[in-house]
Length: 481
Image (tube, rainbow, N blue to C red; front, side, top):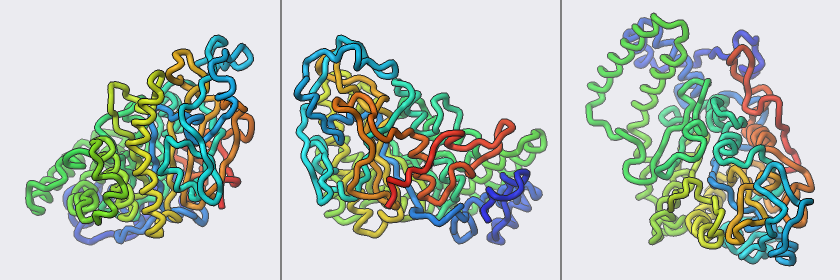
């Protein structure tokens, strides 16, 4: 029986699952027993001291997830959703019948054909444009969803929806919920790692926040450039660091006696402990120098384009992190011009979508192939998604605008059916015409594959049991093998 099936009054309590005597003795001494409460939760989140995970709700197909965030909105009609009608009617006004109230649209806009050619690939014959030649080689591992629906054609709101299931923020991210629900397979590493590329997307850090969940489930940032984590190399001996932790924990205890809610303080103690343990493991995992030259070339780390090289490094680290037991890893796109949403091409579509593809395409394909060759893909859900799509019509005739009435994402591994497409948009790619899906549906299905029931994975907050999907979402069994 999972802890989400117990008495509601016990929903956010944890059972002590065994503890290293040395740390128990330390926390008892330093915090007069309060620290032991923090240790109890720390070990429960990790399962046991040996790093085993919490029991899922049901048998799972996957243990980990990697989210490849294509920030800005890749164009569905230029990647995975070919539309011959756009070529036939390119340059003609779309008319009032095609105007949408939810995407950037007006009757005088014109249909805009794709500057890329589509072809069928793999044994499955999935259509992919020549914008993504490397990803096209992995189609038999991919489940392409062509019928995604958003809510608002705004980057910040759609980013938050994609990450947290809410457009208003102040809610935990998908990665935080996964970490909270399943704990960690490695107590020396965080459950949720963000492989970032030196900037924060629209919507801010709330995209990666634990919000009202314990702070131990917030994303830990690994940078692409320089030291991946600040101060990860210890400057003091272990004995000196331990004395510092003694002092910090004692101070936390004094402060906790003055507050009615000790949750944040308990999380701080746990985070100190996690940071202490990370010092011996995180640098090794982040260091890719031991990877073969062939593997590094496969990802594109030798690229002369620094943006591609840095993105390749982060994708390779993503594989290493899930190998090491990190539960949820997200990789963001690098920023290469003044646009803080890299795939957001209102103009210069051909130039900048080509640049984004050159930066990410090879590394994404290499990651999927590398996971598969190592037997990791069947245990890892890989998600490739932007927060929205792009209009199949244009005002500038040189770019596409924000579109939430129908767009594409893909999933691979973790029990998702490879070599298939699901859903459809109309002949122009303007609206969903078959099997509409929402982000809540995708969230519910990812959680399902990880062994979590999206309706039972809850946290008591604001007087009610809150979940990632709230009152929305369903598991889409048609996507699963």
